[in-house]
Image 1 (cartoon, helix red, strand yellow):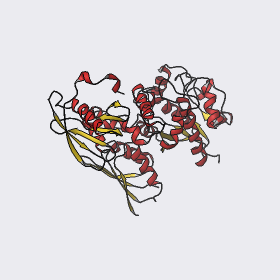
Image 2 (image 1 turned 120 degrees about the vertical axis):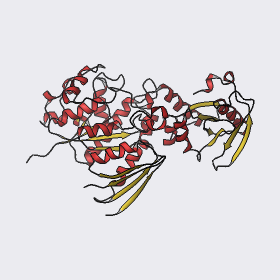
Image 3 (image 1 turned 180 degrees about the horizontal axis):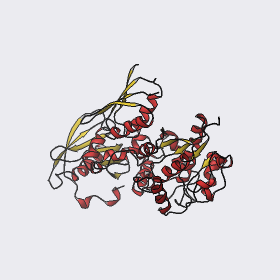
Image 4 (image 1 turned 45 degrees about the horizontal axis):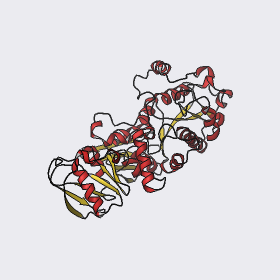
Length: 347
Length: 75
């Protein structure tokens, strides 16, 4: 009896990896999915924070794709290991803080490690040549295969016919003529294939799946590193950069002001880690203070926070300030006027 | 069969799923895991993960702030 060939597929939750996986499953290969969580993934948790997103289904698309395909999915936490990819990318950043090429190399390398540990035979990705300006180009395809160590055990079913034959093709585990030659940023071939496979629902094609491609998020990350004097972060930093208005009036502290109830509820969980404040005399948002503020800085912060409450037009408002131990004090402040908040304070 | 508990409060998806997955790797078939979370996304994600990986969801309770999912570990 011949051995059942097994492949591990990088499942992002998008259409391309879904199609690539299906194309290999159609050839009788046993496929299991793998999904890496860097902390910067737009997928999943972000939807839970903001109230305005409550109408959206809170599903994780990679799980949904796996279930639709009928395959197992292994979700791997790579938050710590990913730091080195983000902080020291060999191939540099894209338009923002996105180290896409290094990220792809890293993920394929991790998939190779998983493949070897679990006795699988090759790796599948949904890459399409020419689809992404940084990581999915003809020149980068061999770089990813080589630097990850996956070499010819890396199969890209959607553009395989435009690439040299891989080991699974040469060994006859899969047939090249049943793979594809998609290229470029157009989505028509993928949509046609989705239709052929009977996929009527799939997540936004080629949608950004990483906060690091977002200009606003990247600016906040750079500001965080600059303020700390070192390129480092933890998961709480990553999460908090996604919520609230970030205002840095002085280099030694930053204010994160909740924009709505969903964010305020999420930020409640950080009250034991940050000095925090909110208006007591009027309805107003919760704010976290990051850094090392003086008493004078806290007074300014309270004036700023008051600006975002219903007492913004009042002569004075009362702001409750709590330290990390939960000790509370009250400040009477005049809310800052809109013209007293310089644009450069907003990150 | 033994019952185990996992506290996944304050974690946002997919972290509760990852913690559940990692905990279940250490359990035996038939064991029961009770996961307590604060992210409402788990009501979709943990059952989905359980279904595709051959585990049975025995219950999913939704409170105002907490969500409790009970899983029987599969083979």
